[in-house]
Length: 114
Picture 1 (cartoon, rainbow, N blue to C red):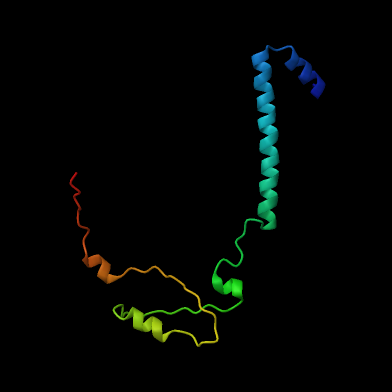
Picture 2 (cartoon, rainbow, N blue to C red):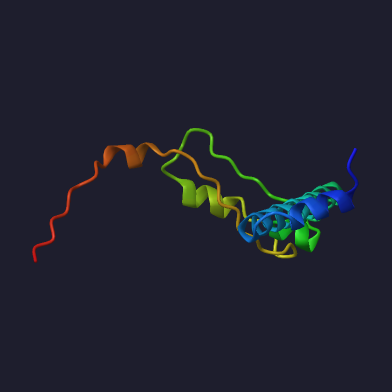
C-alpha cells in the first residue's frame, strides 16, 4: 500500500495540467467533507430550527383560533364577535380557505392597446 508521500511523488511526475486537476479534486473533496460535517452538526443541534415563529409564541400568550360553521357571508361579524378582551395582546392569524364567492367570478382577459 502506498503512503501519502508516494502519491505526492506520483503527482509530481505528472504534467502541469494533471497536477492542477489533482489539486482541484483534493481541495473540492476536503471542502465537501468539512461542509458535510458542519451541516450534520448544525442540524443535529437544531441551529436551523425556527423557534417562536408567530406573535403568540414570542409574547408567551396562547393562540385564539376562530372557525365559521358553514356561514361564509358573515365572516367580518364572526371575527368581530371572536375578539378577545382588552387585556390580551393583539395578533393577526391568516387562515387560507376556499370561498364559494371566488369560484363564481371567472377571470376576464384584459387587452392593453399600444
